[in-house]
Image 1: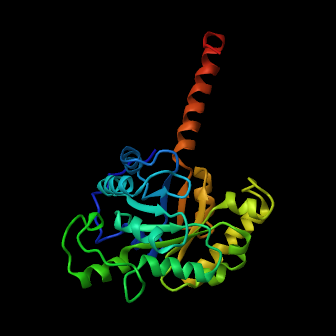
Image 2: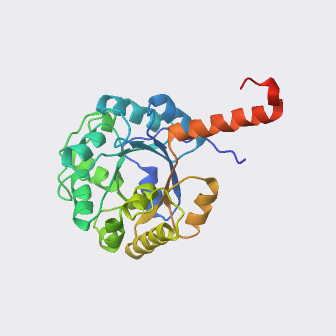
Length: 274
């Protein structure tokens, strides 16, 4: 197992994930649905994940909780990215004001929706995000307004999650959206929309991910699937994926617990309480 130095704390002025993706490097995120919290952020950051994907579609954190989660994530050198619940102004702007350094907007199916995600996550003149200078998102510094807006438009990651058959049909137009940084494929929802629920390794799902990767390469942005294993990281990186998120916190704990208990049961047999 390789070792590494835990990165230094980060702030709103530099987003290592956005910068790495623009250089073509692979970044890996950990997803929280079950219990997003500062301690989980610290665990994932210490493990070496590059970004913390805080799913607010299926998870429960509110904006006050999100602010503390984002602070903890930044202290570990890990970029906090909020998974919004939809493509709406306040659902994108408020997580960013709470300290998220990017958004992953789910269920995007058209170029128009992708353009809305960009518009609501960027300050004028590139978008319509309302300006707040001193806040948790700026560590309560008092930056020059012009420098802040230009810097945030450069550093904040705007990503969309494509997870339907219609989204795949429109993938080239979505990938061509000006200001979009990355596309994440949600294979479980995608499988349900095309009539093969849960079959995330089906050839049609594989073809959809590969079609997305061809589109993002064509338009010079990043992309990749939400993955479930170490092996998949290599498989998809070899096909051009640079933006991938892994599992989710509740399932990670469940699988690790089952592996341990199962291993002990194999060793102890009848001596272990059924």
